[in-house]
Length: 210
Image 1 (cartoon, rainbow, N blue to C red):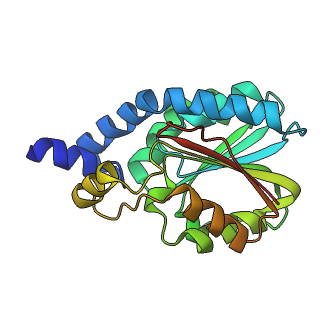
Image 2 (tube, rainbow, N blue to C red):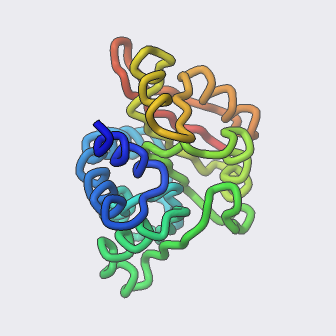
């Protein structure tokens, strides 16, 4: 049980050997949600993004998918875990060499973004750990150009017994409801928020427009 709890606590800020294993596990475990979310994104948006940023990028699997789905897009990745950044850079080394990708060690609330510099922002399985949704969402909104969008994909969007169990095990984790995420996005300055969560689904996918 202790080993499982130690592993789960690596999901917040992976470090060391166990953290490396956690990052690689997340790359595999989040693949299905990432595919679903990016498919919805491609069906919904009318833009072909030239500049994107993945916040809380973890091991960089979502970055790899964005680079593949949008061949002309330059993608930035941000994560405050040194271990995650190292793994993300390894996974996307070819894109980095070609000048299509940059992965930077930074927390979301301290990220240095030029106003209006992004067409697309993404966050996969990470907002649970952010230090205040409205503050971080506002930071991202400032970085997006008018008409740009922010994609959020979460495995958990219900304040239920499962959420409380994970919150009790993983330090710093907060599971937000669908309504809480949508309200924080509007308060942060987004003009239109769409939820793609169907009845009975545990996961939630959101697209917020600047």
